Image (cartoon, rainbow, N blue to C red; front, side):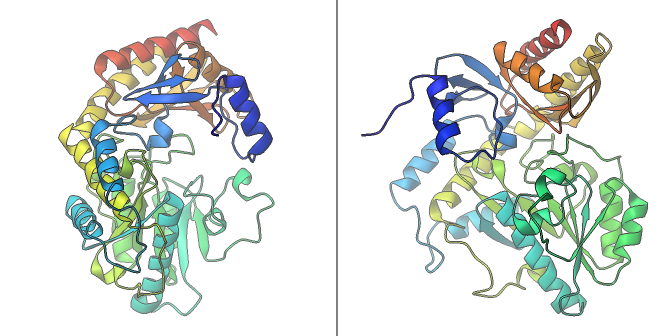
Length: 410
C-alpha cells in the first residue's frame, strides 16, 4: 500500500526523519504545478519565482512535453548505449542544428555534463595541443558553481562546497571573474587546455559580467589555443532573453554545456556540444552513462526545445525582464531594504541591505510565500527571482506588486 501525504507537517516530518539533511527548504510542501503556478498540499496557489533553478523555463507540466514523454514511455524508455535506438540520432541532429555544432554527447545531470566537458578538454589538451601527460590545467572563475561532484568542487571557492570534502583534484587554476587581465595572465600558461566559465554566475547571486568580457575571453582562448568551455546549464534555453546567454555577445564556445530546461523539468537531461576536432577525442569505452541518451530523454529534449522556439520564450524573457528590472529599480528608491537589482532576461536577483549571515532575506522569502510567491535566498542576502518564461506581462506586474508589498511592509 502506498502512503499518501495529508498535511505539510507530515511531509516535512517524513523528510526530516528519513531523508539526508543536505537541503534547507522553505516550509512549503508542493503537490501540483501548471505553467507559472505551484500548489501546496493544502491547496494554496503560488507564483513560482525559482523555476527549479531554471529547469522549468517552459512552465510546469507543459502539455506538449508531457505528451511527448507519455507517448515515448509507452514504446521504449531505456536500452543503454550497448545498442542503437531510433530516437537518439534524431535528438543529436536536432540539438546540433539548433546550436551549430558537429556532435552532441548526451548525459543526465548538469554535473555529469560538466565532468564530460572536463574530460574532453583534457584529452584534447594532451592529443591536440601537446600538453605533457598529467600536466593539463583548466582555468575556472571565483564564485563559480558547476555542480557538487568531488572533481567539480575542486575548482570551487565556496567554503560550503569544499569544507571537509578534500583532498581535491589537481589541475585547476582559479582566477577573478569579470577580469580580462586575470584571464590574460592565466591563459598564457602553455599547459592550459580550457577556460571553464558561466556567462552569468547564477548560483553565486546572478553576477553579470561587463559587456565585452565574454568576447574578450573568446579572443584570448583563440590566441592561446585554449578551449572555451561555456556552462549554460542555468543561463541557456532562453532564460536570459536569448537562446544562450553567450549569444548576447555573439560568442560561440568550443564546448557548450547544457542541462536543466533541456527537458522542461520533467526528467534529467544534459548535453555537451562540440565540433569534431574536440568531440572525436573520446573513443568507445572511455566515457558514458547508463541513462545518457536514452530514447525517453531524446524524445523529451526535442519537444522541450521546440516549445521554446514555437512560443518565442527568449523574446518573452527579454521583454518582461526589462519590465521586471524597471519595477525593482523603482522599488529601490522607495526602501532601504533593497540596495541593488541585476540580471538579464528573466534571470534576476535583488540584494538585501544586510550581511550574508543575516536571516533578513530568508524571512523575506517566508513573507513572499505567505503572499503567494515562492523564491529562495542564495549566499545569505541575495534573492534570485526567475519565473518560468511563459509568464505574462500582467502576471509579472502582479508578482512585482507582491514583492513590493512584502519588502515595504517588512
